[in-house]
Image 1 (cartoon, helix red, strand yellow):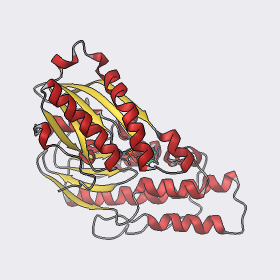
Image 2: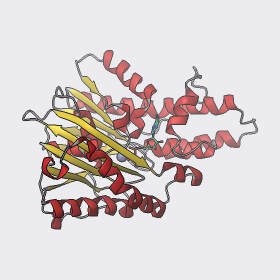
Image 3: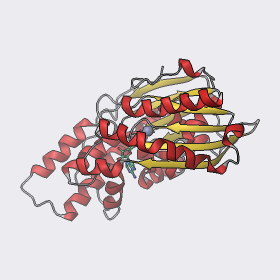
Length: 337
Ligand code: KG4
Ligand code: ZN
């Protein structure tokens, strides 16, 4: 079966083609992403109207490029998967309406996909060993969620952020430090030279019995540092980046393992833009290697952590409710049910 995936929930316009067999092994045939990030870097954040306009420009060329791996896309594609939410309404509509048009004109089944499920299913691309129950941690610019997967059909939300998402904490801190948007990758680079957690920023809710997160206090702690009567030189900025990473990652890892222990899981799955961070990946690997039970850690390829359409097509392989194109609509508020 060949699936065309389409993703346009935020500032990335993405299309991908995957092939799957009877055992649901997923082979990635193409993965094309265009982004309007450089426009948003100038304004320090995403302007929804600008993002939507760029989506309109990119969507057809990106889909066309992704389909180049096929000789006859119209014949070879069996289904089209599209992100229906959550996300920015203007951006989402571009992908959804394009997918509906293809489905109508080519008479193909359409599969609506929740973007957050997509981040989880990025782990299933090229991977057949994932055993349930599993805990999935999704950490992106808009979300920080812990989810228990007992099977592909039973996915239960355990908790999430009460205020800022983890990626948002990076981006807001980046703004205070005059870094480019999105700040995550630069914070990772700057922190690499540092060895000591000098500021030891607060770790809210780290010891609470629930699976909730709170990251908004971090930007306040960083703001307080930047307002001190000390010069903001490169060294101080790098130290702040390091301490910020330590605080965020400490919370993410402790909460994920609390959930993993409570539910006796066999696998931990990571996903979302923040999990592209090499330091976070290493910290998870090291925590898993010293853990008493044999939990397996799964992390998508770096390019599949941030928004892409391959993960949307992959999610459709396991939750493939083929829906009439007339019944599909964008839902910016979609969450875990
Ligand atoms: O999943 P994603 O591409 O988009 C959303 O669905 O939000 O995640 C984007 C977020 C941004 O907040 C960005 O700063 C963060 O992921 N991010 C990182 C890294 N790469 C991207 N955070 C920390 N380290 C990174 N290397
Ligand atoms: Zn995302």
